[in-house]
Image (cartoon, rainbow, N blue to C red; front, top):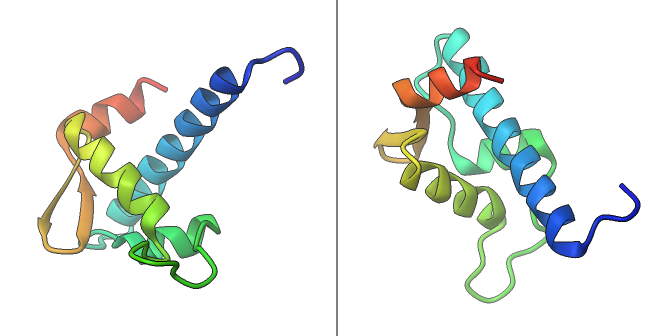
Length: 96
């Protein structure tokens, strides 16, 4: 990834994290789970923050990405805390 500027590197990272979250939610769906919470997703991705600092929860990274994906219409959390793919999220995942 030499030659990429910081913003380009960050955009690639964002894309990878979003894809990983969507993949985990799809996997949960295939295993007949009702959804996954941000803490479980963080644990599976290895993104748990060590100790919460101030107002930031340990799963704050994934929680922020879930909200971003929700704004894009790719996930929802009908049951509080359990995030699932929307139909658009499933279709988007198939396009990869």
